[in-house]
Image 1 (cartoon, rainbow, N blue to C red):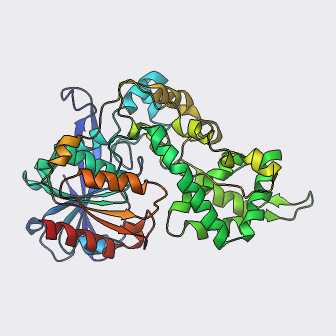
Image 2: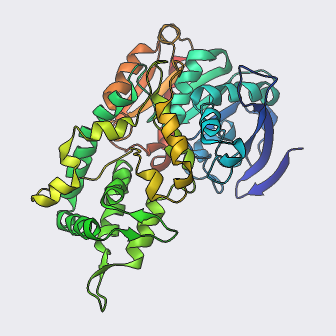
Length: 434
């Protein structure tokens, strides 16, 4: 039975569903999904169309809003919103170091995780839609990886969609994981240089921290091993609207004097832990490269690590031997993550098996997208660090009727930072198209 409760300006209802783990075997094992329905106080939910929200990631549950935060304020004016915890996230049969051993060996765990890409997420959505909407199509709002899911939705089940809204999440239809990261490293370098232009004092600070860690890797609260490579991965924040400022404030508190000499401060170590730990979203690290895999014969084979070797400016040892600024990395996952992070360490063999896996199926249907009839609008952020702008615009041209809003007003998290304005712009585009 669905349970309802209230927050300021909203009525929330919990929903639980069971769906097949493998949708090609509907009579096989089933897993549980959780979703939270949100309706504006005083509105009759039965009179409102549905909007399904798909969070970015992979591996993040739907955002836990309080009241009408961010874009939800605008959405609730017109919709009954469903915040879906995608399979393996939040309260939907969560995947982590504690639960995966229930699957058996690392090989069995890897086989299980092969069912946690956008294709399975979309089939989950289609499995639960008829019971919620009475069979009517719904509008989908996809942020980042949620936009990848929305693009797959348009490829495989457009009959389930009244409209699709995509924010920072138009994927390449054909790029391999290696090609994705080859395009990413120059963007990440630009974000680094922009950060140092804004905060030139951080050049020396970052080099000093890296030199310290090269001699004495630190242990963060909870056991995370902070190496130079792990420190560089703090660059993940540089793609968000306030990420450069967050990084600056973290670096300025790095050292404190102690009887044994300067040491990395507890405040710095705790701040780094909060940004680096995958304890709350391990699925992100496990399947991050698999979301790009479409060639049945080709493994992803730790693509980001291989591509990094072709970009020597990201080599910290070479940087410290010279006088160049240390470059932080971005949205990349590496084998060392599964030794440095205690929430991932028990899953290292599973991650290696996923990286070596072949047999991945295609995620997008270019012919069907070229004949698309669903109104679609996408916010494309100029020089988005996480999703290549050129890839997104190429895909936009390949989807019939898709309308873009290309902007440098926001970074990748624009739907959070811009909230109602971003959603309002996309709704205007799809309604004009319809």
